[in-house]
Length: 76
Length: 153
Image (cartoon, rainbow over all chains, first blue to last red):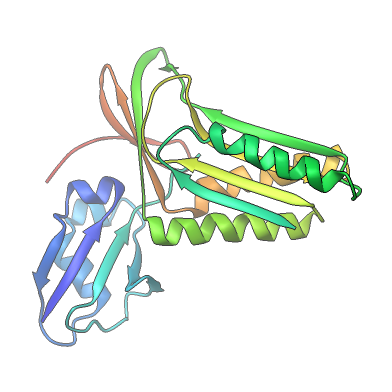
C-alpha cells in the first residue's frame, strides 16, 4: 500500500516528502522505524498525526493515509 | 470572550492594532481594565554569534487549532475578556516580531499570568519549528532552547 509522508523541522532533513510503499497493515511504529534513521529516532521524540489526527505507534495504516511526523515544538 | 489567533506570514504586530481596537470597544461597557502584550523578537546574537534570520515552519492545520485552544483555555482559566495569539511563519530577521500574545481582563495580575502561561504553552504545544540561521551554520532550536546543528541524510 502507498502512504504519503511529510516530516517537519529537523525530521524533514531526513525524510523526503512523498508517497512511500509499505506492506498492508503496517503500523505507524513500523513506518517510523523504516524511514527515520536510528540516530534520529533515538535522540528526539517524534509525534505522529494521521489524516490530521494524533496517532500512536500501534495505529494501523491504510492505503492513501497521510502521515505527518513532528519533532519537539519550538514556537515563540 | 474574544479569541483571536493566527499564523501569519507578515508582521504579527499588524494584527495587534485590530485586536486592541476590539478590546477598546469591549471596555466601554465591561470591567476590562488592562491589556498585557508580549512580543517575541528575533535575537541578533546568540552566545555572541550573529544571527542572520529565523525560519519558522508550522504544521498549519494542527498549529492553528492548538493556538486557538491555548488562547481559549487560558482565557477561561484566568477569567479574561479577550485573548490573542498571532504567530509568524516564514523568514524573520533580527529585531522583527515572531509572536504576539495579548490578554485583556479586569486587572494586571490575571493578564500577566495568562500571557506567561500562553507563551509557555505555545513553545511546547504548537507544532511550530524554528531554524536559526547564524554566521556559524544552521541550527534547529527545540522547545527547551537546545540547539541542534542542521544535518541532512
